[in-house]
Amino acid sequence: MITVGMVLTAAGLLVLAGIDPGWGVSQLLPGFLITGMGIARTTTPVTTATMGNVPPAHADTASGTLNASRMLGLSLGIAVMGAVVAAQWPGDLADSVDPKAFADGIAAGFQVNAAIALAAAVLAAVTIHDEPRQRRQRASSRSH
Image (cartoon, rainbow, N blue to C red; front, side, top):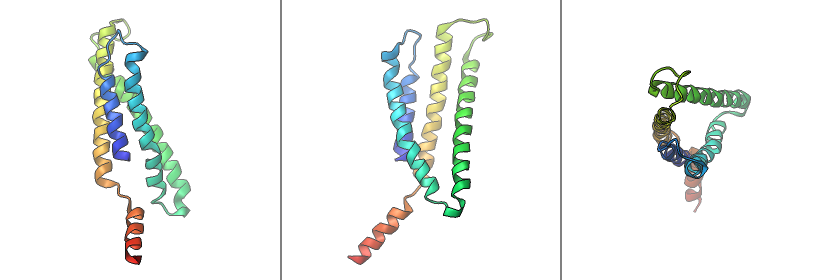
């Protein structure tokens, strides 16, 4: 589920990377919906995978670390997006009001974030395994 969620997130970000200064809500909505569905498919399984693999005595520390990691990720994501937009911007950010340059910068930021989401999907596919379910299935098959 985490892999699928991250792929959906990347797909939604790539839809948003087509942004144009003339876009309104109807053009933005599909990208936002796809991205939101991806994030929704990812958040709970990440929490479950994390908390399900921690001894109960360490659940409080794991929970705090997970929440701190989420906040750090959000902060870094915003900083990366801002840096990409600024790098794409011609001239001085404070004096420019070029909507096309802004849209191009935002599009590049969405592309970078989509690449990060795809990398996360690959990482999840390679590293996260549902061991408890596999153990239950083996135990169930032995009892039959």
